[in-house]
Image 1 (cartoon, helix red, strand yellow):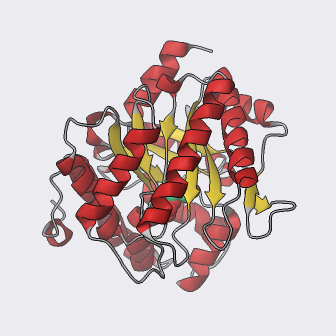
Image 2: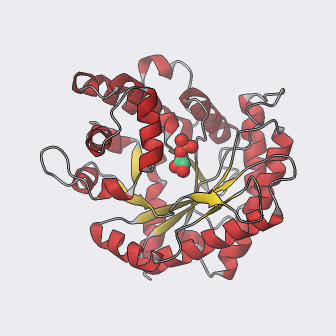
Length: 342
Ligand code: 13P
């Protein structure tokens, strides 16, 4: 393990007010999103979409790293250039999703455990040789009647820590992603409590597994009320709760926190990230960044809808969302940017 390289990569991922673009949807998830827009669910269409993303002019000004899926990292552009080469040429660091999905957890109805540790050491070695410099593993925590259980939180935290240790051994910065889901009637206070417990448990296991905190990026949910909760707090209230929760549970040695969007609209995700950076300027020890999938891709995917003629307009929409999020890192985002893109 080259400690300094890991630290350099982790820092580079959150440098210059940039953030990450998650484009690592598994084939079933990508197909589901395509199906809603009438896009063919084929390997070629998935390639075309990912090629559209990574060839967006200027993307590297706002995006430091792109997270790919196994199929994508092996794909080539239509002209034969490997996609990974196009990503590097854009000044973007290549990352790779390495978990194999969240599966029903035995003995824990309604809860999931993320799998993928078997054979992981060899897969990481191959991804590093292909040019990847960071990886991602997503754990899913649902809120509901009697859940999450301690068993689910512990098992997912331990898996995340074992994954992170293997990544660092292989020279890849682990993105540690625990997602407390938005689905449900729970309040913001309940999301706060569960998110704090999940994060504390994860950092306990990262310590036990000897993971170097300076060489990871944390990718958590924002602290939000459930989608079906009667009370929906303001942007500032969400920002305050999220940063307060993180200050309690995330060690200062971690260089960056890059939020997932989790199904929030692009505008809300940007506004909430902006409020955190504006209201807590210089009062948090880590960079507060983004690692969005839907909140960056969705409007562009809708415009594209699988048609070559729409590629340029879709790329413009993608860049616009990336720019909005870079501005949010500086606390300079405003709703007016949604119109001008600047
Ligand atoms: P969303 O931003 O759409 O939640 O996706 C982030 C991600 O990478 C999920 O694993």
